[in-house]
Image (tube, rainbow, N blue to C red):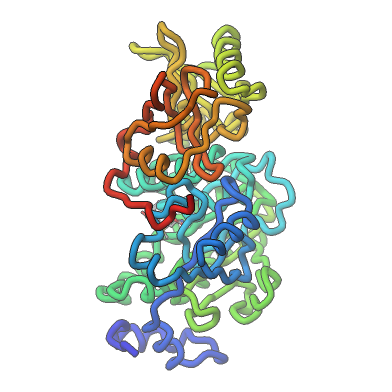
Length: 489
Ligand code: SAM
């Protein structure tokens, strides 16, 4: 037991919050235990059944997480643990899974577990980076509807964007602003996740230093931000919409009290919906209000708090909307001519006869005409909020034809009926290292090829007479990685 992880003044502060069926010593003991490793299968890339079969063949032991059908606690053989970090495995690099703490899978499940149809759902993720829950929401929505994923910190927006790309998420637009600004976006979203910035008292098992600088004052300071954020999110929620408020902290000031503050402010317009039926065993962490208050010893996980709030009625606010002068969205619908040209190119090169060109737009730059894909359901939000990163760049149309972007292969390879090349493990390693690929590729036509490994698209290559020329973007090249332990051919 390492009691030093939890400062004495924190233990004194948190002790009265412990529910009567839990005891303090267990809490202290569990906080000192290393966290079990867990992953969530990205069903946008691979079915959970296929992933489990493949992982089991590699010697991975997967234990289902009761609240997330695609989530598993994971144990890998010792030699694999020593040879390669989980995040550097091919399966992770190709987006087949997300390394995500088990209790952090609760909020997206709690948001969508009664939502049978997500086709037209507009969802907001107020504090989204690094993107574990945005990518989970996108998978639960099967890339349908639209998710606006917001993050305040610029460096974290980049990580969020990279994770969205790695996981082949196509229904998401990124905004980069203080989440409090959503107060001006009245009643735009049917579902909202507010996974709020917090004091992180539940994360000590992952990061032993996380409680080093903890003070009671910092709890009060962050609770004030959380009240502003939940107020803003509530305004952005449509009447009858659902919001999840979650944190990875344990005190009531940042959890129950923030939710009760909202209820006090808006009365009957705020309804707490019980999560006691979310999964078998949920009753062990359910509070009297129906919130989940997950202490580390209940499910041998990180600490977490999850509240489900339904907006029963519209609430008024009189604020000037700063988003009224956003300027023009810098894209136009794809012209008929360009659409036909791209369609015939994709059909003849890859047999992609049903590419979603209706969802594509164009933009002229000095260099070329760019073609982008936008989530179709984004339309209703255009001109209402300032997007930081939105859409997926697919191609540039220059004098000599189309120059295809990496993202087209990653996100739309499943539409290709020809001109795809499955690589051997050695060729796959060469591709990730940025090298050209030698081999017999005579069956391929000339021009772009989608290269794949175990059915997952890695990106484009160009067929030359004697080899495939590597087209992996420089920033994705991993020349120092050794995948040899993952070779099975
Ligand atoms: N939902 C994320 C996930 O599952 O990967 C984790 C979110 S983390 C708990 C909270 C995030 O809120 C941090 O990335 C932090 O930078 C961001 N944040 C802090 N203040 C914010 C604000 N005022 N508005 C929006 N985001 C904020």
